[in-house]
Image 1 (spheres, rainbow, N blue to C red):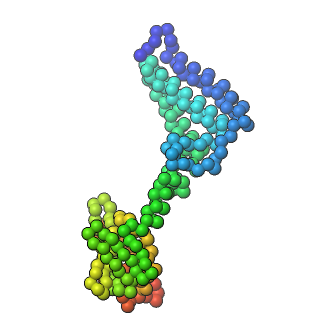
Image 2: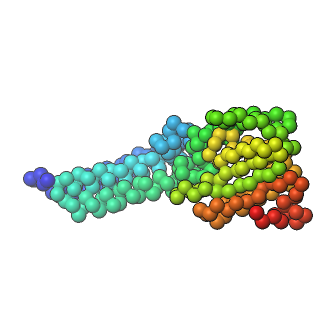
Image 3: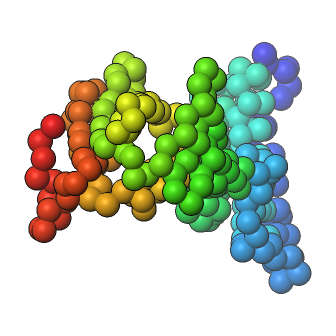
Length: 243
C-alpha cells in the first residue's frame, strides 16, 4: 500500500535517525545499568528470559529491532526492496547478537540444562519404583505378581534389546535357583537404582554389559551379564563369555 505524498524511503530515514540517539542514550546510561550474568536460568523463565550483560547491548538490540519494524512498514507501503533489506539486516543480526553475547546463557547449552529437566533426571535416578531393597535382596511388586529374591539365589542375568523402530529398549532377565524369573526394562521406574544394586551385590558381573548390549543399534545383542560362579570380566577385565 502506498500513501500519496510520502516518499517510499520515509520509514528507512526515520529508523536511521532514531538509531543514533538511541545508541548514544544507551551508552551514556551504561555506567548506571548493568545486568548480572551469573543468575541461573530458572525453569519458569528459561524460554522467556535471556539476560543482557550490558545496558548498551540492550540498546543495540532495540535499535536493530527498529530496522525490523521499519522493514515491515516499508513492505506494507509497497517498498518491498527496502523493506526486505531492512528485515534481512535487523532480524538476523538481533538474534545473532543475543546468542553471541549470551552464549553461556542460552537454554540449549548442555551445561545449563533447564532446572526442570535436571530435577526430572534426578528424580528418575532416585526413584526406587516398584522395588523394595533388603539387606540380602529385594522385593519387586509388579502389577500381577510380587516376587522376593535374595542375591545369593541369583543364577544368571541376561541383557538384550528390543527394536522399537526409532529407538531401542534394553531389558534384563534375571533367573534364580528357585526357578523364579524377573524381567524388567530401562523405561520402568527404579531402573537406575536396580542396575547399581545389581553391580554391588553380584560378584563377577560384567561391568561393561550396557556398552555391549547397545551395539550394534537395532540388534537384539543378547549379553550375559552375570553367571553364578564365573567372573565374566576375567583377569584382564574382558568378558570371556560369549552368550
